[in-house]
Length: 85
Image 1 (cartoon, rainbow, N blue to C red):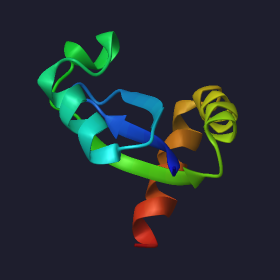
Image 2: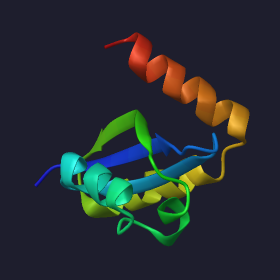
Image 3: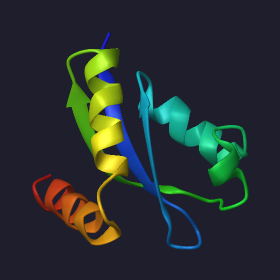
């Protein structure tokens, strides 16, 4: 099972970081208001970053690392991801 770390940008411009093993379903749940309490009031969200992880444990550790980054570093991470697609 593939795990992903993702960042979505909320309607208010804030960034939310999470992990999932089904990205499309998770984004849909965020936009339906059932994904996370934080994003429920800030819909719609759009995917701005994704990164594969070897396991749930690795994904969780990376999520924590990303959440600790300052906003500017998260934004740079997002630009790097989507400019390489």
